[in-house]
Image (cartoon, rainbow, N blue to C red; front, side, top):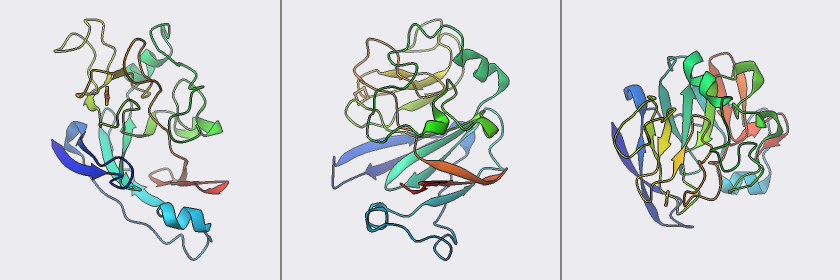
Length: 204
Ligand code: FES
């Protein structure tokens, strides 16, 4: 399933396609955080945090929500998917996510899973390619398939110029995209609920 969204019109004016695996698509709205947290003027201008129920995202499925006008992917990886992340990382351009695209990498996500340790199987990433801002398509299944190498481990393929990303949204070497996709700040409100755009330090 795919939808067309205008992403970040004031900055790039790019038309992107967002794709969801498993047919799971949802858009959460800002929750009741306002009464307990006073965001900075900068954060208010950029957009409020978004609460998302992830209890309905089964292993191997992905949910897409919108935060600050951009698609954010929430992928619950299976044990087999997780196993691909720490294998051979020599084909990744920046396996430790040392280069910044648009957002600083949260400290708590500086690991091969690029996720919080308490729920390391859940990837939360901004689904925007760091080349020219298209939204990659999910190619979650491993193995040979059109436009991908035979040893494809599962991940994402940008339809615009062919950049490929692993299941942690890390870009492979020798592709147009210069950096991995962004991981936004986020935190768990419960085992089945997260908030994007806010963590223990406050709002992004
Ligand atoms: S925009 Fe993704 S490869 Fe060019």
